[in-house]
Length: 272
Image (cartoon, rainbow, N blue to C red):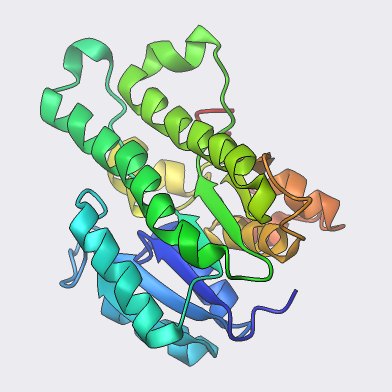
């Protein structure tokens, strides 16, 4: 499949993995909808919808920066309507936007719980809902959620119940979509990294510079997404993908170039 002229709607695309996927597909000639909240740069996070849109164009794609807080369905509907107005439809949806708080139940405040469920669960659900009518018109439509394989082992729930529940819900939404939309030929899958990824979340919330140095760059997830989204939607659906596995299936086994620090011992992702 060629991405030339394909419209890709990416939530949380102003930085990190969302940005990396946007630039990867832009280099293939895709039309990228940079849907995120950030219009002014936060020094701790970096990136805005406008800075990424500029990079998308420089990479060879077309860009539509859209300020959109996916907690609010009116903003989602407006973002989708603007996409249709500018690009004529939607071929691919990447549900990347996410909130994180690695707190146990006792230390999870209601507002933090609500934020994770409003973005990770409700946002993913209603962005998908808004895009489905447009995806039906595409010749190889995909939905890709950035969420982990569902594993009921209490180990993953005990450490940070609220966050785990919210991310598992994203994955369950993908499975539900894959079955519901099978008749329409719309693929729905999830993608998750084998190791920690050098993003603002890892820098600011998980382990600082030390963990960044034990991580891979977002490019590995972007490359894996690229190969998933190239596959036929009618047969590639309902999967929990891991980036390493996707690349191995494409014959790519030397992953050393993705390490932030060449030769460093890598830190396995917290869900794996």
